[in-house]
Image 1 (cartoon, rainbow, N blue to C red):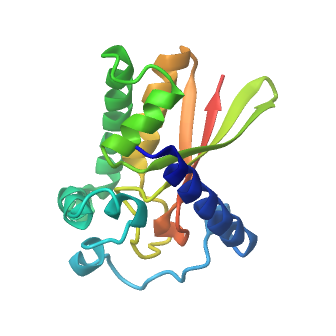
Image 2: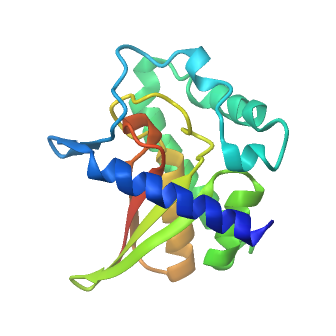
Length: 199
């Protein structure tokens, strides 16, 4: 994978993210990006044929790959949606943990490559701070397979990815890790952002 192309994509997405964060609104304790929230439920036509420029430049059928992934994910009956969110988080944790245990990912560089190779998204480690004895990471995913180009539904939806980050970093660092998605395509942004706490 061409390193310069990845760096350019990250630079462009960071600029876009900075602008969107400048104009975001806080509703209660939830953030909301610049795109207006839709009324009603997510329609099938809104899930298919997303435009992910970086991944589309790598493979001709990216939109079909992503659409197929989303068909099963977003067609959960409303009555089950809350329990499925929990199952998606736990499933992501298990998947992430197994990536480390089976040595498919051994460090952050491997993680970045894995997410690119399997087209989950472009991982960007934006910041790392020590706050009250805890390490806090600011991670972003651009062109996320789960939500890129989806409308603003009023809340983040990348529960599996939050679980996956938790599982990977728990296994990698042997610390207690909590990853929470704070910004997402589905709450009005053009990227996903995870606040990750390690203690």
